Length: 236
Image 1: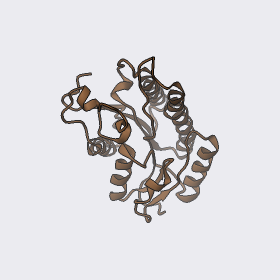
Image 2: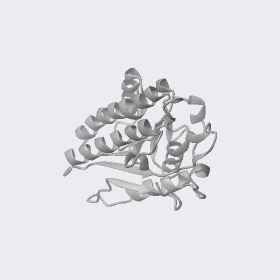
Image 3: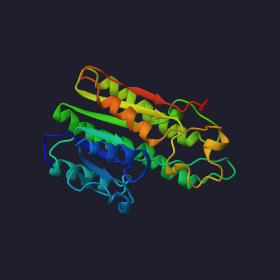
Image 4: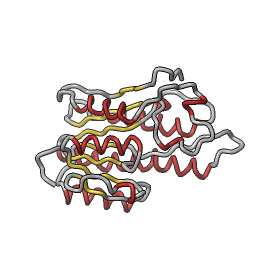
């Protein structure tokens, strides 16, 4: 990797929002490290700009290996995009609590661990930007989705506390809070939320990419702590 263009780590890059962000940044000349558990889905990135490092973010050993790989390969990191996440919901009678626990390990524990690990590097560098993919459910709740909402509330709380701690420095923290986006998160649902919620035009991943690019285009003195994006029919 060269050191003339921004260097970014994108987690959850095998599908959905992470995949779309990674491709958009690659098209704009960013040098990327992408990670996800499903290595086979990371094979279509341009090899000259994108280094693929698959693995399980819930493993502390893997996170150590990932950190070492980033700084051995690129020598620095400008952006951390926390896009990896799971969605598990359901009523009390049928929710699979073991899947809820796995979701919390990824959405909260792994994200917190990686963020703090790389913020220490950002502080050594004197700059960097963490962009967390949160959710509208990081600000509101709905029945059957309390655990997922709690995981996003946790990201919101961490992001705000870190923003305050890092105010006055060149290190930034931003949260993007999408409403319903068409990704594979809901592919196994019997009724898709766009139908159950009457959302005729859900967000597309390109809409989230546009929000990311807006944040990245701001001058150095501007901070965007939170940016909520909803489809017009989303009345949660």
